[in-house]
Length: 88
Image 1 (cartoon, rainbow, N blue to C red):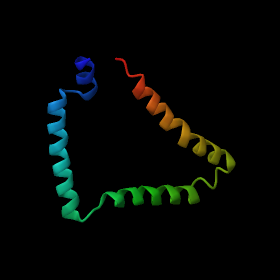
Image 2: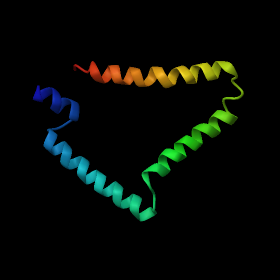
Image 3: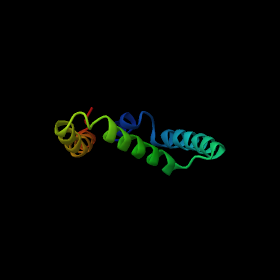
Image 4: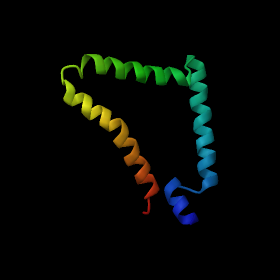
């Protein structure tokens, strides 16, 4: 079991935790330096998708709408199923 955990994490859980803590510290320092907040990124992505939706996908008509609406359900389920079925 621990061999599978190590393979999934890429290293031992302790070392992975230390690496994540160091990277989190560096990213937090950079974000604080520039005055960025985590929600700024989410709002930026939301604004980008809304702008893309209103300008770019209007040309595709209903076909594009159906594909995007379906993808919002299908892609997260696909990722969750892949994570649950991770065997190698």
